[in-house]
Image 1 (cartoon, rainbow, N blue to C red):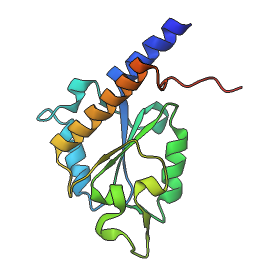
Image 2 (image 1 turned 90 degrees about the horizontal axis):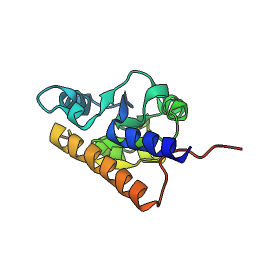
Image 3 (image 1 turned 30 degrees about the vertical axis):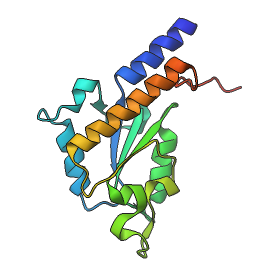
Image 4 (image 1 turned 120 degrees about the vertical axis):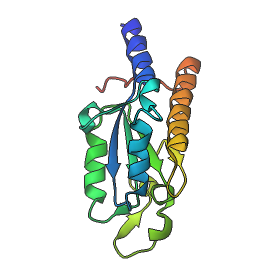
Length: 158
């Protein structure tokens, strides 16, 4: 059974599936996220695959500040993701609320609503920065798994 857990952990690190979600951005970061997935930058060379449903995603890539209308949906999408799940905040707005912080319809940055594993600042964040952030997240997960600090395989609930 332990060997199966190791294989699943290895597969999650080597081929993570991501879900892209816009929480109220101006779409500049969205364009850069999509550009990172195109053949020019080729995020798929690291095994990253874009998925259309949170039930199949390992990493939630969010752009934009969290608006009050989208806050409940973001939490629901996060809860639908299987364990272990990770969140990447792309762009200044996702990291801190950016220029929209304090607006009447903006709740906050992503980290005020759900836990964030990696921050990629920039307005907009470049595809190279997005790739660098995702690769560093995967490297840190692999390092933690090798040290035995944190198992990225969920423990069974009793």
